[in-house]
Image (tube, rainbow, N blue to C red; front, side):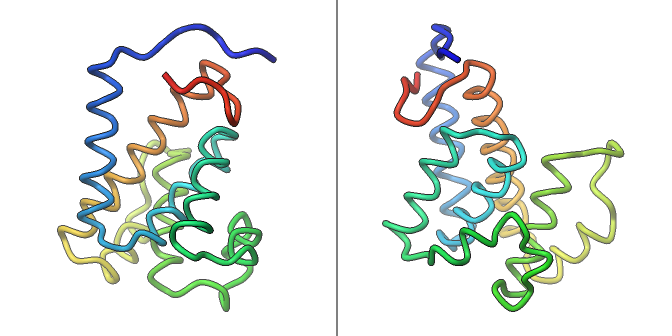
Length: 149
């Protein structure tokens, strides 16, 4: 599989970067932001984003290799993730997959119990941005270490 040569317009790229930075800043928890981005990237099979965000989680934010390894099965490892993290991960999966066309009310309400209104908006922003990046990278077949733009 080779990368496709389609490049992102600089304006689109810069807007995506700014949106992601604003969403993460407003969430205020860099570890949680990385967990959310890794989980969405797992679902979307985006090797480029997985490589980037696992490195950021471990090297920059001190996340453990064990929690990263268990992230794909977070629901079966409740002792490894806080209730707040589990609510964010459930929301991440619901927004990423949208199987029934909607995020289930109970999933949204569970997240709302752990995040204030502004934090929840930023969490949704982080989820939305990483899903957009995943789609941009996967559709262009960008692999770890490959061209980004």
